[in-house]
Length: 124
Image (cartoon, rainbow, N blue to C red):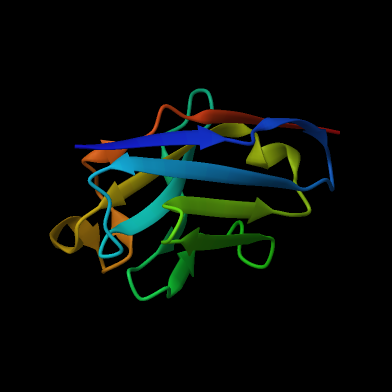
């Protein structure tokens, strides 16, 4: 079993930065693909950024150039550095992990491991 716990969310002004962290515990593996997803009220969950087991990354077009995903396998932590935040980035952010067979395109985890989420609110 794997547990994921996000932290680092908060309420910030437009243009600010935040770094989200996701601590994985239990059965963890560097073979996992991992990713960040977000869901705003009334909207579907969307993939934000993903990282494969080899460290290669993928981003949603809306965050490319502003967000950076990284992982520290020694500490079992996934990060999301978010810069130049916009009001449309406001959402609950979730991290997810999966073994390779459940990684879409090798990057995007389709579960089964999800965190509880951390709220990010960006105001103008």
